[in-house]
Image (cartoon, rainbow, N blue to C red; front, side, top):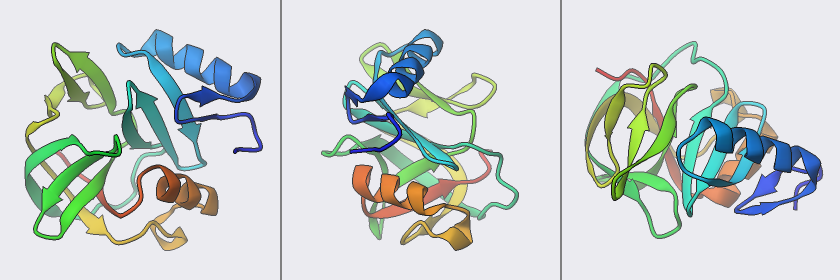
Length: 160
């Protein structure tokens, strides 16, 4: 349970969470049922899909290249598959998730579609085994990610 009235996995607590969810509903195509904000990241839960984005522009990015499938895992988190298993994708600031027919489209900050969940994506970035303060994540951010989408993370860098 959060102390500040935010939303957690579809249950709104307090007026701040309700206002945030209403504002998001007006801005996005799916009907968000949850919004969890930390100082440096946001998790939007729409129809049991958790979409994680950064709240600030990145000052440095990792440069590994990922080419492969990105999809919704059993726990609702958007994950990519690699030889190391599945990693939750942490998208850059301004990226959004929008319903697209029977699937979900990931859009960049300009509104251009990067791909559909369940299909192939290509983007840069890198895997981290945990989110830490050294990577720019506050203790609140760490708690949110570890609770909502535990495991490893791919921090998206540049998209070709």
